[in-house]
Image (cartoon, rainbow, N blue to C red; front, side, top):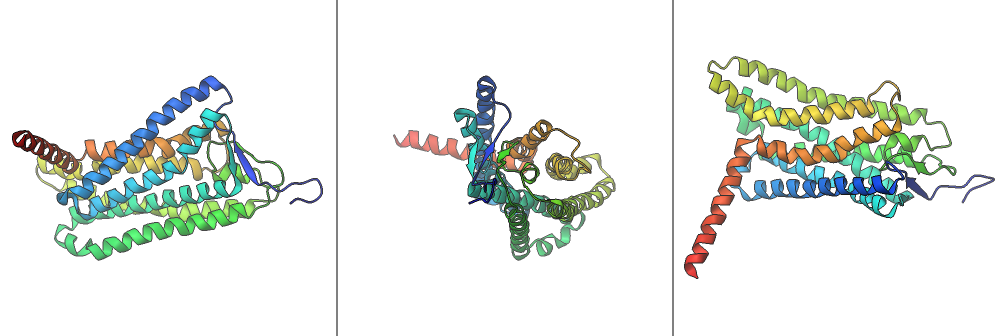
Length: 319
C-alpha cells in the first residue's frame, strides 16, 4: 500500500531489447538456439565427467561444478527472456525479480571463486606435482567447493537484501532483459549511494581478488613452463591450462567492464548487449572450450563412443 500520490511497486516490467515484433521473433530464435546449446553442452560435460573414472580428479570436479553453475544462472534468466519475446510482456513479480537477482548473483560469484580455485589446481599440478595429491586432497577440494558456494550466496543475499529493501515508488520499468542491479537502483525513489558503495566494495573484494587469485598462479605457471627444456614439453604443459585461461579471460574481462567502470558512461543498450556475453555466450562456449581444447575430455568422449559401438555390436550378435 502506498501513501499520498505514491504507490508501492509489487511487480516490475522488463523492457528487454526492443518492442518490435519482428526483432523479438529474431531474438527469440537466437536465444532459443543458444539456450538449447547451453543445456546440451553443459549437461553432456557433466555426464561425461560423472561416467568416466579417469576424469574423477580435482580439476574435473571443479569443472563439473562450473557447468552446473552455468546451467543455473542461465536458467534463471533465459526462460523469462524467451517468454517476454513471445508474449511481448516482460512483467515479473517483485518476489520473482528478487529470486532471479539472488540466484544469478550467487551463481556468478560462485563462478568467480571456482575459476580461481581451478587456476590454483593447475598451479599445484604444474609447479608442485609431488605435493599435488596432498594439497588437492578430496577433503580440501570439498572445502574449496563449500567456500565457493558460501561466498557466492552470502554476497548475493547481502546484495539482494540491500537492493530490494529500497523503496520503489511507482516507477517499475526495468531497462534490461533481467533483474540486474544497476537498472534496479535507478528505479528507487531514495538515495542509493550506500548501495552503490556496497556494490563497488563487493566487486572489488570478490571480483578483483578472484581475478588476482587466478592471475598470480598463471604467472608462476608460465615461468615454470618456460624453464622446461623441450618444446614438446612446453606445449604439453601449456595445453593443460590453455582452455581454462581462455575461459577466465572472457569471463573476467566482461565482468570488469560491467561492474567496475568508474562511471556509467555507456548506454543501457550497450549494457544489455554486454550482459548477453556472461549470461548466454560464456555458458554456451565454456563446454566447447573445455571439451574441444581438452585432451582428457576428448579421450573420454572417444572411450564412451567406442563403448557404445561395442555394446551395439554385441547386441547385434545376440540377435
